Length: 247
Image (cartoon, rainbow, N blue to C red):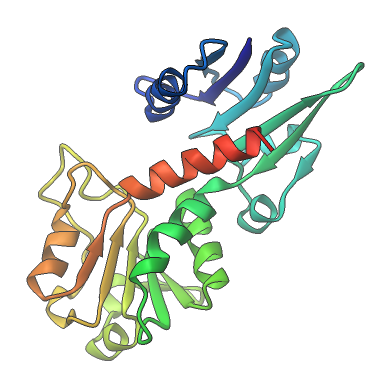
């Protein structure tokens, strides 16, 4: 049996378990299994790994993406650059398990955004400063796009929403929402942008995918901007995890 799983807390619902269970069924992999491991602290990872010799791959979600790094043997460049891990590959030697951390969110976001980019998309605003925003920043830099973070309170490193002028909005034609604002059931909420300054030159990407068109994206549509939600990114990062486990 080849086993895979997801660590995080809480794990009341899981895209990963449904996705991979259906994938195994489609591929006829009856000897593959995906389980949930709701652990409150990241140090429980080693116990899980050592207790099941058939476990070869793990996804990591909130709140362990950063804390889990200290228990790994190696990190790939994406995990180092982002400072967070969401995929772990387990390679077993005779006397120990070697754990390598990756960040497939970088790949998922980058490849979902890439086909939409135009020559005028040189600068991006990243809304929110949570864990996902770091992967987005890393991917944008890989694509050669300068970026600034935006949050409620500004600083030397971050713009405040209240500081977004017409001139700034004209420069930063890619806007990525990395905050949970607008997620179901709070569908009437959206980041506090000056949406009146959006144009057809803008590209709005929302990591939220439920609802399919958030109010943030709808306001972009209303001005002729291009839009994309986070569902394809979610699928792409899952497929990247699958390829990592099977390398």
